[in-house]
Length: 286
Image (cartoon, rainbow, N blue to C red; front, side, top):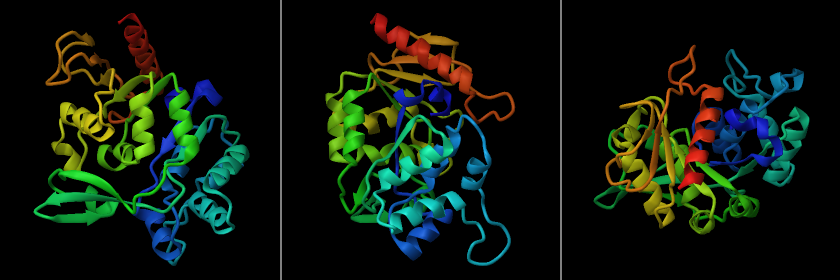
């Protein structure tokens, strides 16, 4: 989202709400509610004008005691939830406070956890446990099965472009796709759909999933081969790969240098924005 924040109100992020680790996990364990951590992080990443308010929102308590490790932004969002403010309205209040123009929508406004089927009838519940798996699960599901935020479904239906990633594949990209209304909206959408690959190999179970396998996971979950293009770091030659990768068929593959100069595993905003633009131009020609 930070790479595309220049389009302001035209940009909408649909954010996973299943985190159960860190400050978010402690809040959920003690207070219940949805997971605010990913929404808070997305808000912080798309702030265009840093201010005292944005520094306050991102402030993390140090030292010892009950507040140690908590992020003030998480506590602010949780306080709004406890005041019976609708989660989406709470996000919009913070957006106004931070002068953020782009939209952020929680995938669901009902508390939910991510779970994984491991085979032989066993399963595990919670993002932290899934991140710690050494082998890829057979499938993912939500506990309980909740409704998608209506505005998220509407945003997908009205989108010109839908982008998947980058991010933790199993625990950030996949959860919204497990909601039936979101999967249906993606399947029925005529928007161009682009998958952005991570720059490095993920730790944990996702490390076992090749690019081809991850696209297959998305297609299986959504119920159709929806991905039109993939933007990935250079593997062979810079530019569009004319040779189909694995079983991806006619999916366009764009290999580009995308990493920031200072941190090799982080996307450079300008390079990524240019790659997205290049991919869209190629998809318009075909």
